[in-house]
Image (tube, rainbow, N blue to C red; front, side, top):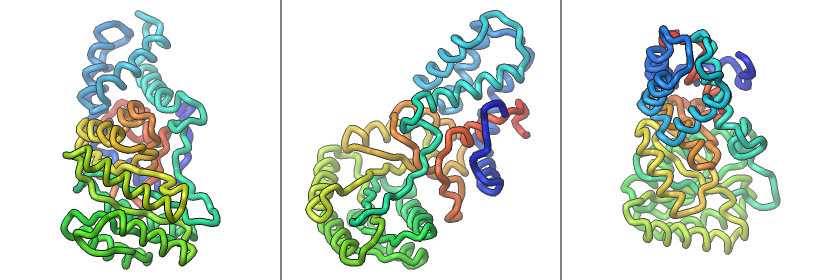
Length: 327
């Protein structure tokens, strides 16, 4: 595997491989066609590879960055075999994602909740339909399984049934949910949630919010109010703001992420629904373009299928060593 190394256990890696199977097949079919019969790196190969990566939802800017790295490394006109080309591509894609040692894009993006005297607060943002509620439930399950006391806040009071859905998930996971019902002031719900968390000595609070992106000003004002109210209970809250994106929407997810980062300070990303799409390449584009760490990727419906994001493992699943798309 070159400098690729196994960070996951076998079960997690198999789940990731299975979840990215459609994306892998799509991108590898295109790359295989580019490399087959080619034994030199030249302008024609680079043009074809550029097209293959863009069509695989890697995005124009990220594709250009990968190709620039490849050009600097490759000996122009040198004869190489197809496997060597594939190895170089894998390593340069990974190198792009991990170019800042110890930065948000390093290979350690799994989020560890710090233990302190006050509850740690994560605010969840994202438009409706991206899998916010189920992602919150999976996060609650994950951290509860680690021995943390978790509490949820149902501050998405705009969407019908959002509060009820979070309550149901809370019961399934076995965590408390603070809510006031549809139409309530989201900031008031957030305030009550943090007060309850402090009173019950909770370790972690995860607060859901409405995702109305069509009006940036209103969304900015609403999130700003929620943050201000939170800080009255816990001065540093929210400690994290995570944006949930639907990976199956491809480049639309990237554009959505850019718009959200214009509205609020996003500190982490959760990419959902990657198991049902061939657009998994967008994770590379989002990681590269936003300079915000991808914390988790959703590759299935089970609780355990919301996996921490490791660039090495992700690239190895999306761009395997073998050029056979079916391998």
